[in-house]
Length: 408
Image (cartoon, rainbow, N blue to C red):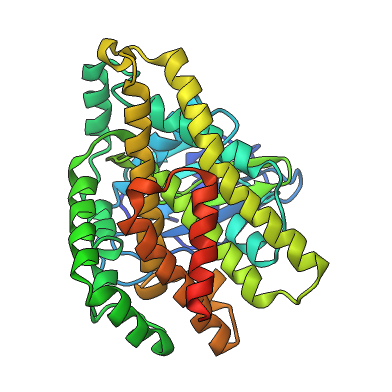
């Protein structure tokens, strides 16, 4: 029997022994079962259940390489970062993240709430399910976590101390490569759908203006420590029920541009929209679902700005941030970044190594190719025209224009 004094990658049986020997969360003698449920790119996720009471927890363990590819050597310290960011999220956005119970720096694992009564949002969106409270929940989460960790609100020295806890070089490097660099040239590591390759080359890879703007954005990401961002806030990192939203998978967290999180949410809602457009049968059900997704995109963009501005006026402590006009200037910068990141995420999930099932599950090759053209045309617009895109209606207009161009 392992004593867990030295790191190793756990099996399901090991996770049961860990729960019995290292945690004080189950009754003595409890009949525990375990299943490894991780299907992400980085970690091992174990669900441990008390067979008698039904009580359950999640043990999430980080290894020395990413599951997506052993090319990515990533520090297991990301597990500490996830533990720390979940504590921050529970403090600043209570009810919108799972609770955490334990962190083990030797076994590189975190113990947290089991959210099995929720569903991963990407899966639910591919099933064309609707969540009417999602826009309200996620915009509260983003406004609170992004503003309340910024220099607008925090004591600047305390903010710098917090920033030091979230230095995250390995996972930032993954973002710098996979989001800002590799989608914009014919990188050998890219996984490009063959019918899309020539289109991507002409639209993006050979456009020097696009390349210059993505270079600027990459350096903004690397140097602009504005807010404590989640860093990977897509629909695969969100659990949902009709009445609940929980943000998970915060191991990419670091101090970066606030718009990075907002743009990721919007881009992944666009993927959900494109999936529904291409896969649902024509009729009232499709119209209702597409209408809801478009309304959600619009609400996320607009509600975030409303809540952010209201919170700014309630909580700003920095004297100069309260000068007339500063609030609008500050938010406008976040929304420029939001538009740009929406475009970057659309491009990288279409052309890079880490795709989304919203697109790859489109079985008809012609429809998938059209979906990818829509995403790439929109991506270019969101990047190049980011100064003019802020309101929800602007996002819907880009989607409509991109659809028209993709099918022309």
